[in-house]
Amino acid sequence: MMTRLAVFRCDADANIGFGHLIRCLALAEGLCNEGWTCAFAVSTDTAKCLPTAARSQRIFILPFDQHAAAMAKEFGKCELLIVDHYRLGKAFESECRSWAEKILVIDDLADRDHDCDFLLDQTLGRVADNYRDKVSSSCKMLLGPDYALLRQQFPAVRFLSPRPLRQHLSNVLVSLGGSAPQEYEDKVLDGISNSDMLIQTRLISGFVPAVVEPRPHLSRLFAVEDMANLMLEADLAIGAAGSSSWERCCLGVPSLLGVSANNQKEIASRLATAGAAILIGEWSTVTVNEIAAHLRTLADPTRLGALSAAAAGICDGLGVGRILLAIDPPRTYKGVEIGLRRALHGDCDLILAWQNEPEARRYSHNPEIPDSASHACWFMEKLRTPTTAFHLIQVGEETVGMLRVDLNTKYELQVSFFVSAGFRYCGLGSAAISTLPRLFPWARFYAEAHVENLASAKALMRGGFQRTGDSSFEIAPKFSKVMGQ
Image (tube, rainbow, N blue to C red):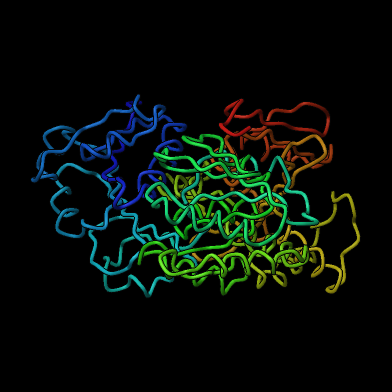
């Protein structure tokens, strides 16, 4: 099979920020893990911003104009074009149709028309109606933080290194973005000092200041690669409401959010409304005393805990994997396409109904059918647990089963699956199971099936598991090490 080519059109610099590039690199990481070749078509300034690890990719420096024609000449054709650029829209995308088999657009403004096969907007609360008149009816929309583009280090840390409860505020991570001016950083550091709280501060800066003012309890960091573990160690993050918002949510890090660009206002407002962050205003106008006052309100550990729980519920870090499944949907051995979606609070009764199906608990560890109250408690706890991923299996619009992973005591992801009675014995379970290494390429999976449950054993092995005992099965990690682990 020939290697497929994905071409990214994005830019980054000190004026427009680096979020577009960072999220494109996250998607490129996932595509490369699946055997794609990735290339970047960027401006000269953007090429200078590429991290060292990305420079092994094919880089095409665009001429000043005629971008679509220049890209067609350079690449000839590609299986997937990814466009993440506020200055480009339908005209550019249509011009690329002659050489790009499929087009995926990444947007978060919903303010212009697009010609694309996939539309990705990871904004919290984004709905299809926001784009209904801006894309064709055949465009597949991937909306909300379930599709947030994060590097694999973030879900790996979330699922394998559970975040401990914080009893007090003593460690703060400050990261205002690569284009934040020094005056904003100084304002935050002054606010921390004026709070009269003993706080160890780590400042991640996009530049080395000409004059470094010594400050107690402050560490300055540059060119950070292991961001996930730095966030995990922090009791609080102070940052901008850009792409890093989803990184902080993935790890359940409470945030003080400031706005540094118009495109961040909607994200900041919605995260604050959801209880996942505290919005302190625009960095250009917020005062040192206001920052200090917000910090003092977080001396209460219950407030930190509430912010953390709300953040972790918004984004689980599996967005790249879900996008890979949208681009290349899993199919049964009979060719039936399936999909996965995150379980929601409203699915509680459906799961209970499945529990009551004949034979549903025949091979279960607990053969007793739960009552509705205890089932609801169990279900809601699963949805709240950051180290659990609970998906429902879909065929078209019909929900036909569930696929769940939970972190066990051996730091494996333990797999449970179920297919509703009317949809068994046609490969749906094994097709769903086969998605696991695509969603969690860094994980080791473990599953059990009763020795008499031949159908489940067959589904596990057809889905990629190897038998390791009479009733035990395993999938080894696709990759042994992820940055940040």
